Length: 273
Image (tube, rainbow, N blue to C red; front, top):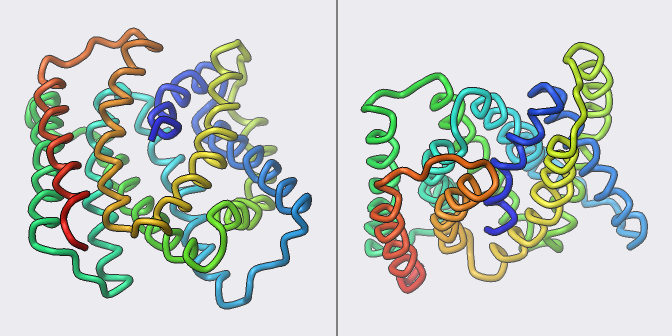
């Protein structure tokens, strides 16, 4: 969660140097090269044919879809606002996981998960004046594709090491993202500075590769529904980084939302799944 919580601030920094499409394409290309190097060094054999469809879902959700939609949103949205909207991801992931795997968490689990989502949604609407913007629509779309990627990645992580799941998903995207990088860099202006370079390096190496490696390993250990609820802590951490790194004003309702979210995390982790 610490790794993921830095994604939005790092994306904002990256947008200082790159256009949104360029940033996503270059980010995915660099992450894929890192993943490919690890796979080659470990002499990891190709996944079985039956796993490639699942890897494509992971690639479409967490390598392309989520980064692109959130980057487009962050052109007009603050990181603190985006972080709270994405706080709905745990409930979305748990719902898709229940459908995909056929598992049915307990009523207590669902009550706590829904409560956490309500806290996040109320916070979002309070901060946006009760209306949803275009950036919110991008963020809600990002929730759906990311939840699908997390669910399928969590399933695959029970069949192969988590780092190989994200590694092969990234490599699968490499040809497309290499071409996209060349095209987008020729279209969108580039103004390199320290923030932009640091932001790009973090979203590529920290968020996309390392963060997802640890995340999928965790989901394989404790299960997708419970692991997804740990993400309720991500908005709180991102709020801290938005103030510390970007100088954004912390919403007054944030402490109340933080307490409510943390209570929901505690309940979901104790509930039988």
